Length: 384
Image 1 (cartoon, rainbow, N blue to C red):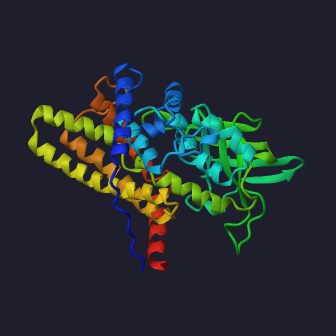
Image 2 (cartoon, rainbow, N blue to C red):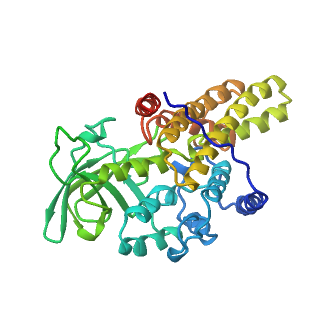
Image 3 (cartoon, rainbow, N blue to C red):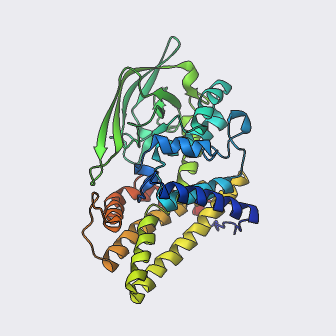
């Protein structure tokens, strides 16, 4: 039986100074009224203007090679930027997926033409991606997907449907997993490929799936005879499943899996201090200690990524633990500080509470359901 161990990481003085720089920038922007704080901001708070500001600082694609406009900095530096953005609840959803997974995927599997075309735009905060994985009739069994790509002269014709597609109404492109050859019962994960679909293409229809708050983040996407040229195939035809697993490791391993409700926790602690509610602060401190443990695990994964090690198992574990923690934060805080949650409230606490509670059901779905994650962990521990 495998024992999962994550490294204990300590930030260097240089990294601590870098954190101060990022924090000072965000404090200044917050004071100028550039943005309002939101819970779950990485998924639901959009601002093209703010994304371009972050890009101008060099903090999108911070780990990408310099030849494509990146800073070639460490995964730990990226972790610092990500953590500060989430702690401030800044509107980063526009560029989030391109920075977190589409860019790294293209750098690992893409052609030189694709890298030169897409990566500099991503780094500037001007090019946004969505991820085309889930389908309405596949559930958590992604290998049963039905979206197909048929080869034609000069490219592929794509037909099918994707759902729960984050931010597609804001995105320029979607990296789409589809079948490029018939399903083989003996190899269910074979015959799939990743294609870059221009979301402005003929035959693409995007329809909203609204949150309980009325916000529009998720979408369902209909693909009807959509043409995709050959130069928009990512990696090898037929290797889409393996490439997609690499992409999911990036998706599951970051601090966004533990900090979605941090703005609510921080605001609650501020109010409890104002009220001199010592018992409430004791309960809140338990949440802080649990968050700190998860944070150390998450930083350990960042350290493994820096060493180019496989983090699939560790990322699945931390995402599962983190998602349940995020939901627990909202449940505990609403009892400590009763209020009427309202997305449109002028009171920041009531608004953050509404966002945290009503976004909560999605925490255990996005990036892999709880059952799928625990299956990955169980198989990984037992088989090793």
